[in-house]
Length: 130
Image (cartoon, rainbow, N blue to C red; front, top):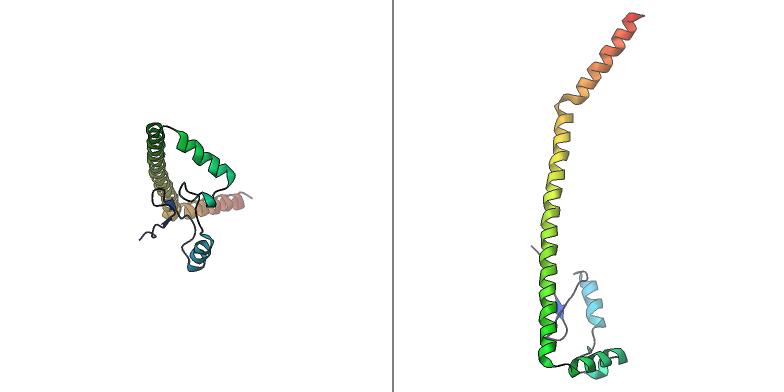
């Protein structure tokens, strides 16, 4: 089965945890969690983050909403493209695996013995020609 998906942060903007799922890694990650920079928690923001929040708050809400939708749509497009690439890679890997199996079948089908017979016969003829 797959691993549990861990998300953290502001409920309106949850972030995906991308670290290891071993207990020591999770404990280290959890130990580093602290207050997040949010419009409702400006004390946790640096000056650059505060300026960005002010800039976004000054935007027309419908324009901001439109930008959010555009970016979320772009993420969906990119994820779909990623999935297509993964599927293509799987197909390529399967095709490469079949080629490897075909080579093995040829080798296991007596190629080595054929080469040995050729070498032996060539050497035997060279020996008898002397």
